[in-house]
Structures are given as structure tokens and as C-alpha cells.
Image 1: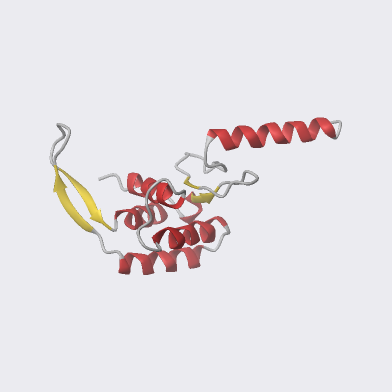
Image 2 (image 1 turned 30 degrees about the horizontal axis):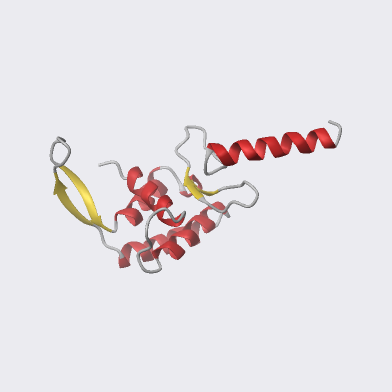
Length: 138
């Protein structure tokens, strides 16, 4: 079972691309903010609290011609983030560094270099930096 895909669902939830489940969006947003701000202990403590309140309910599923496999029916997004944190590190949860963007992401790059939520934000930031250098005469 690939728990990273469940972490990506958490990203979609925080970024408003999935419907909110109570106040889970706000709490997950805080997890990402703590992680991006270097407050690992706070991020982990909140994740532990969320794991206790959103227990995982696995179920066997078979669909789209696939073999039988496991899905996490409840608590999957929280479990996915917990798996990323324990396998890859808290620093893999990020908040976009582009101006006027507060979307979150999970950094699965091999060199831990992701700073933006999307290629679009990365391009905008690079263009803005280029224009700023040209204005300053560099």
C-alpha cells in the first residue's frame, strides 16, 4: 500500500481541492505550517493527536480490474502524512514559498529541494527574481 498517495490527499484537502471533513483542513494546515517553520515537535504532536482522533480503518478493495488490495477508508489522509513524516522526515511537508501563495505540498524529491506547490508558482517566482535582478542592473 502506497501511503504517500494518502498524504497527497491531505495536500488536496488543505489546498481546498477536496471537501473539508469538519475542521480537519484547519488542523492539517497547522501541521504543514509547523513542519515548514521547523517546528517538528509541534507538527508530530498534532499528527499524533489527529491519529488518535481519526483511526485508520483498512478495507480490502478490488476495482478497475486490479487485484485485491487495501484501501484506508477512514483516517487515511492523517495516516499518509504520518507515514511521510516517519519515513522521509517532517521537513518533507512544505508550504509554497511563492509570494501570495499559501498552498501546501509533500516534497518527494530525491534531494529535498522542493520549495513551491507547483511548476506554475516556481515559474512565477523565477520570473519575478529575474525581473528584480534586471531592475537592479545585475
